[in-house]
Image 1 (cartoon, rainbow, N blue to C red):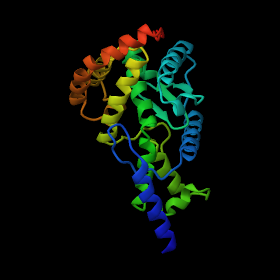
Image 2 (cartoon, helix red, strand yellow):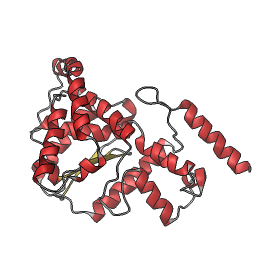
Image 3 (cartoon, rainbow, N blue to C red):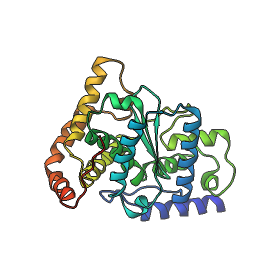
Length: 266
């Protein structure tokens, strides 16, 4: 009973003091330090379980785009030592994890035609991290009793293999290494809004976010659906919304260039 009261108190506090883009209250039960550790451990698992690309050009282009985006992130994220890896995988996909980790599949370079389009997808994924969407999902799993240890699972106690799988799922990763899981539509919308803003602030053309998803849909028609489409639903509405938001971000884009933020990654 006492433990239940303590957990209930922690949940109430987390809900009361957490907010995102539009003051949406979040349930955040896991500390930033613990989320960063989880993200780093998951990234190491992905690196050991998947083939890393030896293509220096793809890695340099990805690193360049990430560096430009890091410069416009909130300070607590910008000061992290972000790690970038390109995975030898033909599926067009990308992801970012807490702890400052970014992964891009070689297949993504079949879809993106410019640095701006690559910035669109990476900015979107980094926005998930900034918005603490993984923390929110892990916390929701804890609240619903999927992690039976409750808050104690994150206080240093050893988790079971089942709990580890749930934590991986919270990060957007399945138990099968390299397979990404979908965020909710609400999370996707928030990441779209923030990611497009980041790319404009970094000096990338925000209009190219529209091109990215158009390319994705075209790629889908020419072959099997990219996994990223299954994790990012409702592409036609997404394109419409991104197109509507573009004019309002052109001032950000132009201001970035005037401030000297002119990425040259491709």
